[in-house]
Length: 242
Image (cartoon, rainbow, N blue to C red; front, top):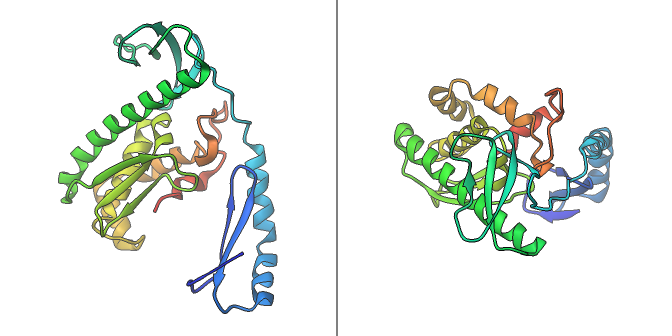
């Protein structure tokens, strides 16, 4: 339990272990806090059950022939020893030509792949932001890419900065575009009022479909596969935006 300058009790259950964090007003009696938490126990159990249902994180070896998710599709890693630029196959095949030094350690391969993933994500994001910012009538914000545990994206409208979750690079392109438009809309309306959703709706009429698609790819999945039959694991995940 954390006491903060807040008006209400805020309760969050964090993946993957289901840790519960409760933020409460500074002077709220402990008995009141316990009563609120007790009333949310069914919801807490439900959240923990969902997290347990998600498959374990696969151990990635970054070796030739290994499958990696990129833009919502499985891509096969093809190791290329020696100097060169890692990238997607030029002929459109779902393959990633991964350039590494011969006999590179697992840690070195992981760092190299992660660096390329960030570079690829930034290129995609900058292209989308560069397109949508003038269309929506906002200044191009400072753009940051990082891994986040609880958000797909965030926006600081005062500083004009947008952060995007690196994991979006593995999700379908429509998901990334939706998050970009969502965060840019916060530069116009900083909250999630009707006015905000009107901005999103005006510029991206099919945003509900994109948000539903995002919900098929749990925020905490870290590249894990969605259900084979396409069934949504966590429809609410598309709401993990600020």
